[in-house]
Length: 261
Image (cartoon, rainbow, N blue to C red; front, side, top):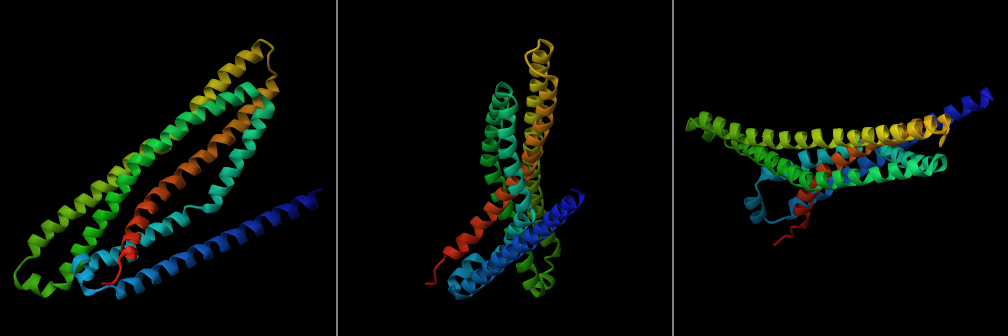
């Protein structure tokens, strides 16, 4: 038996290592193709596009926005898959242990869904603003240093400092808004799970006290319930990264949608 457990642990570790390496390789290959496609496509666009779009925005799309997609891949697709599978498997176990309490847990998913909808609506706008403000910031940096001779010749250092401070402040405020949403969203998912656990404990304890439920069943239900809500935080973290990556991909797709005149 011990040899079998050791072999199972080694197999699990090897498969997980293989999955992480392969998923990382696939993700980096996708980003590599995206960078090359965007770079080649931008070179093929007409001069009028570059005069209108400016080089700073192009740099922002090829660097900052692509890095945001990298953060999505680094958020852990393997963790997301594991969380989804755990939630699905534990849901079946909860119904097997006690149907009324499992239905109560199922009802708690309604506020979870509403919280996700609330976050999705506001996060889309907030992350889009962060992509816009960082692009404007990069444009200012590129134009300032491309024209550094003119800046120093006409003594525009203080004026450029003031402009940069304003743009940097706008970018900071945009990021602050995303962190504020994150501060509501992640603890909100935990709050729903904690309230649901308390209700299960109260109702289950009442049934145990009146002989309607075995204490062992309630204990097992609570243990599985904790494992049911823990992956919700992983899903919430991934969803947060997904919203940011969606806003970045939207900006990249606008460049790729341009056609040479």
